[in-house]
Length: 115
Image (cartoon, rainbow, N blue to C red; front, side):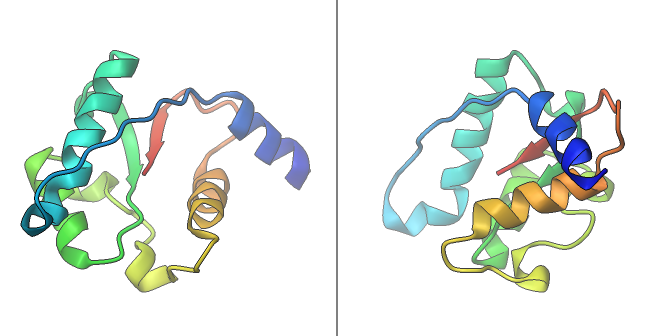
């Protein structure tokens, strides 16, 4: 059951990527531009997203993403982010995917976003 559920979650995803960098003083907002580029690549807007998981090492990064992209609080890291759940070295991506897979329902057509 568990393997089937995870497989359904993974098969039904689209992926894209983007790089964004700037002056070191602006590090908290660098992910915002990358997120905007990813949305553009997929032809989506923030309104199309049902749940957003941001893996933040610093709270200011998550807050900048949420505020600048106008992501509603109820869909932003709804189960807690890396600060509250843990930010495992070398396993951050696995933690994000596992969290998202466990919160998705089988056959759910919503768009969820891990960053």
